[in-house]
Length: 312
Image (tube, rainbow, N blue to C red; front, top):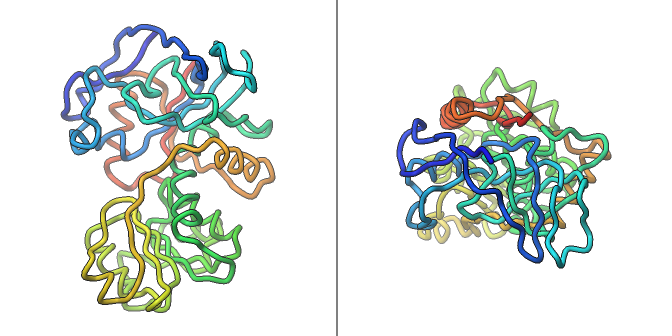
């Protein structure tokens, strides 16, 4: 099968198309013929070598951890899925990802593709949607009526987090550029702060939960707006400062996504009910050049919604 791989860490030019062996399913795995995948920051961070201590894998590495497609083969112990099923998934994080014509997925991580949802839309959801869900609810314990600040609301994770928080009955505040204000409002944001003209830490206070997707100074300043005693900060980009946690008397932690087929099926149901909209900002056909272009766009941090890679 065709795949786009890296054989060493480096710039986007390290992404190269080559033929690799077709995947063979284990007992509890299926083979999915991909119709679409999507780009996430972990992709280009790993390509550049930033995560090599955490994921010390042998080369070649096939990046990509969002899958939407059709099952073409099932393992001997798979009972709930069959050849021809249309599915989407966030596969386990291995060196055999989804920048390929076929990929392996453990059967418990699969979710059925809702009838009303396209493969491109479904591919945009797994990693970003599960990240938002787990940050807000599993770790952030967001409750109806609470105030949540979601940084970078126009991005892939932020755009889904706004919708999920609003569905849960929270008062949703987000940061975005002026040009994306209307977009963030359309997703359900109650307040949109233009990060270019306004310092959020000077205008907000008593926030119950901050979802930090940016890190560095944004994360540090976020401590200032949290409600003392019960405020929570959940980050997906860096471990919060212990001294600041104590100083502001709040809970703060960094999280790492856990693939979860059950939660993904819940996200699929929300999509089917029209309560969660997939935000596909850019579609690029699968190729060496296409993946390089997608990595470059993702690394700017200014892509609206998700960058989706489509297969024939």
